[in-house]
Image (cartoon, rainbow, N blue to C red; front, side):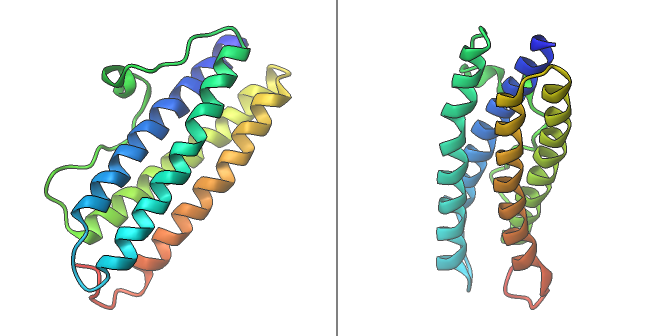
Length: 152
């Protein structure tokens, strides 16, 4: 069972790195009437996601594994959609929200895996991360909800 927990942790390390990279790309490519707000929101979300990586990697080490750290391998562990060079603000927001939904789904499944493996430490970590990603997805959903034309 530890293998399944470690695999779930590795997936979340890869997800976090890719989300971070996406958020930095969105941050740098922000434009339009909500430029300042979205530029800052993307950077804030990036910093929050980055802050989760170390705890995930340390948990892998606690369980006796080696955390995935080679950027070339992140896509082996993650189903995350990677941001492209040319995206509208609306596409960036939608992609980020969808990526968070994916992570939330995986984290909820990981809680179950850790619980079955009698690993309350990993289950707790996954549960705490669900809350972070739910909040970020909510912020993105609210920006997109109004369809007022400000987000192109």
